[in-house]
Structure formats: C-alpha cells, structure tokens
Image (tube, rainbow, N blue to C red; front, top):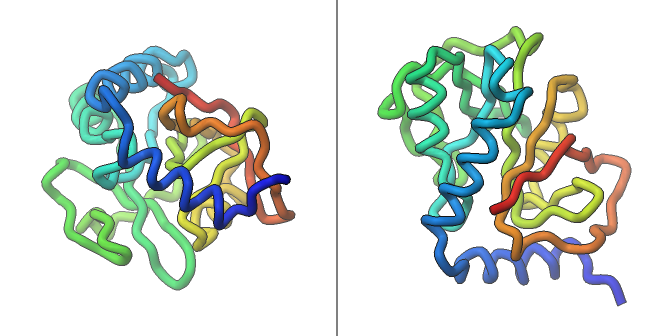
Amino acid sequence: MENSKEQLREIYKIKRRNIENKKEKDKAIFSKVIRHSKVIKADTILLYYAKEEEVETLPFIDYFLSIGKVVGLPKTQEQKITFYLLKNKEDVKLGKYNIFEPISNQEITDYSNSICIVPGICFDKNNFRIGYGGGYYDKFLSTYDGYKIGIIYQECIVDNIKIDKYDKQVDIVITD
C-alpha cells in the first residue's frame, strides 16, 4: 500500500534528522549544483535558508554572493512566498515557521534568467516533492517558469508520491 503524504512527511523528517555523514553529503550536493550548466549561466539564484536537518544552504549563499549572482530568499506572507534580495548572509531574521528570511524589502521581480533551488522533505523519481504541507512552494512554482532544482539526500528519494493537481515538479533533483 502507498503511504500518504502525511506518512511520508513523518517518515522522512526522521530520516533527515538521522542522515550519516551529513557534512560530506552537503558538500557533494553543493559541488554538483554549482557545476550545473544552468546554474552557471543564471543571473539570479532563488534559494532558501536551510533548517538544521535540510541540505545546508549557507555555502550556496556565500558562493553565489561571492561571484556576483543576485541571490533571493523567500519571505512567507499571506499564504505565499515572495523572494527578496539578499546582499549579505547576515541580513536575515527569524520569520514565520522559525525560518530565516531576508530583512530586505527589495522584492525580486525579474526571474528571466533565474534558477530556483527548492527544498523538500523527500522527492520521488518523477521529481515531485513533499514539503512541509503549506503549499507555499507549489503556489510559487505554479507561476514560475524558470529552471527548478530540488536538493535532497539520496536516502530521501522515494519511488512515487501520490500527487494532486497543486503539486509541481522540479526539473531535476540533485542528491549526494
């Protein structure tokens, strides 16, 4: 029998907390992402500020800022996420859901040459994801036509997620 989204969410939250060799796996994912041709060509990188059990994103933030890319982090407002400019990794504060958000009020509106790096609790082999259940990323991705990259540990890849009409695929999932 196929697990429900709620069941998968709980199973993989626990799996992520118990990832072995997390630092090495974070480095492997980082290395693959920054070498991806679409990432190299992009002007703007839409990222997220990782929670402890997620793939670490501070190295991405540091790297992309250091090479002059426009970096955006999401703020959660009115049941949706909007990306705002991040000029420095310290320019964040704890926002909704205890997630660090940019303090900037400079909204990123030009997604013409951008990549969105998407978090997930798990992804399936068809590039669908399970997030935290709020639908924030699915709402954003439904109108975003840039390239979408999911990042996750190999242990958090499942065969199949039962999807609904609101679920959006990423273009590629990069694992360790």
